[in-house]
Length: 125
Image 1 (tube, one colour):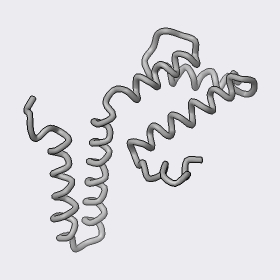
Image 2 (tube, one colour):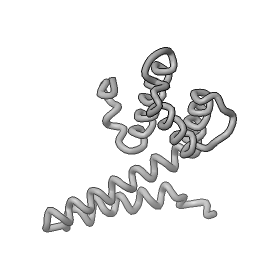
Image 3 (cartoon, one colour):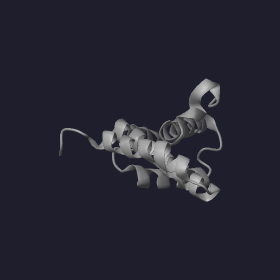
């Protein structure tokens, strides 16, 4: 692993190049759109790198608590949660509230990486 530039700095440099040099040179809408998509994808990668493993670990522990298990990884825990929801386990009672709270927190965590602007100014509430 190198000291500098680190992965985030390299990604930011490419994003800056796309936005400042490639985008203005695009003559067609398709090229502009694709350049914007690429720059946005790089923003997402930077946010994921900066977040590290903590969000996945939090989700895993939340799902384990909801499902009352000490085992399982996020993907399989999500599948089990979906199975229980389909089976009617979240149709009422306190578990329903816990599932709704989990769903909201999960969406907010994903938006924090994918597009944090949706969380600004109370848009999430």
